[in-house]
Amino acid sequence: MEVTEGGVTVEVEGARDGASEGRADEVFYNPEMELNRDITVATLRAYADREPRAETYLDAMAASGVRATRAAAEGWDVTAADVDDDAVALAGRNLAPYDGEAVQRDANALLHEGFFDVVDVDPYGSPMPFADAAVAGTRNLLCVTATDTAPLCGAHFESGVRRYDTLPRNTEYHPEMGLRVLIGALVRRAASRDKAAVPICSHVSRHYARTYLELEANATEATATLDSLGFVHHCEDCLERDHEFGRLPDAPESCPYCGSNRVLTAGPIWLGAVADAEFAGRVAGEVTDDMGEAKRARTLLDTVADELDTPTHYDQHRLCKQWSRPAVGMDVFVDALREAGFDASHAHYSGTAFKTDATVAEMREATAGLA
Image 1 (spheres, rainbow, N blue to C red):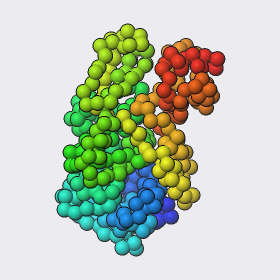
Image 2 (cartoon, helix red, strand yellow):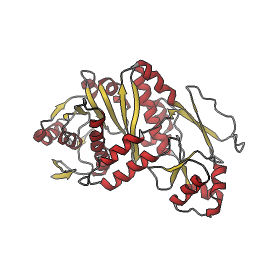
Image 3 (tube, rainbow, N blue to C red):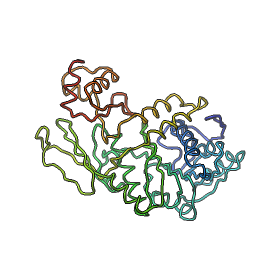
Image 4 (cartoon, one colour):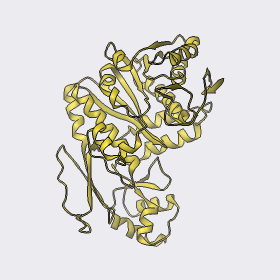
């Protein structure tokens, strides 16, 4: 069968909703990842302006080759790799009109043999088995998807510790936790190879986290990126949370706000900005109407560009339940915080989530008149 995405028609063997574009035992087309692919194309367009010398693009786990074909249609010199011979044959047919190449290669081996300006790692599950090779083989931009959200956010704690070398915690801001666990792990892997990895666009959508890291081979800058790692301390009773930068946590024995001893510490995770606001805005501007998820992509990217850099978010419904008051419209709630003198923004992954520099007590007082 054939499908059309972003003005590009490709051959696919089947369509299935799921967590990734391909699995180890089969090749299929996943329409649920169209938003991911639309944003990828928009990012490639924006990055071509940011770094005009970037030309080569590797889709390291090509599956049906949809993502690779869309990149090739944008003028990138594309290589699509996969270990499955059926996937390689299918990707090769899809790439043929655009002079792209499909190769049957293990991504880790291929990435240790040469360099690509842009490398896209979108595996089934965790990307960490490919992280070292991806960092080694990327010149400019590393694009990474992680679909193992339970380990990332601490719901599967031991798996998260093993895969990401951190202490993830399962909190109500689990999308933010997962994204920052992922970025933190990738930044550390890059730094170990004397490369600085800086996220210039990131998002969490449904069942996956996605980040775009700009790499620079500079040991001094690599060391500097480690300064953006640190820890979050979260009180399970009053919902207050603090964060601290550094490689060793000074975990409180009790909550400094309510005295509870139910304080969780997560980290090390990435505490810096997950996106370059100006670049995210440019990516939003590169979304075109021929993209099937254009409306969602623009809304998401505009929110990412405006989002505060705080490493956690609050959920208005959770707070209002604790305060025994009804929730109000999110715009009204966020505006009330701003009018009270606090920074506040929506969070891109949930309609009821927001970020602010106010404490829980300050939020309660600032929004008291809304109930």
